[in-house]
Image (cartoon, rainbow, N blue to C red; front, top):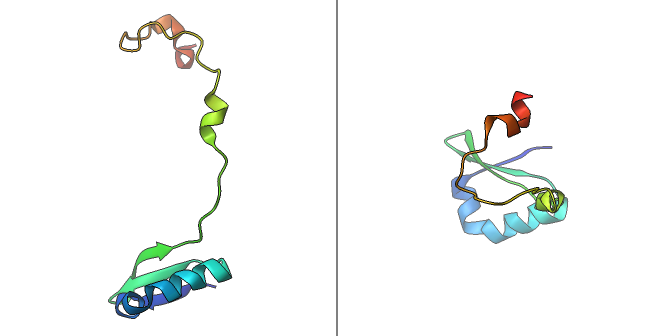
Length: 76
């Protein structure tokens, strides 16, 4: 279920609406002149994507030097 609320209704009761989003775990869409402009969504914990990159660097000699064409995997 999508909850719509106008900016004028949202502004004076911001904390109340934020608690509602947290409690119901549902997004809240804020409108301006009847058109959706902002969506407040519950925070979702995501996995740390940088952990997958640890140990993936083979060489790190000169970071500003261009990569030779024969080392581009995309070209293989």
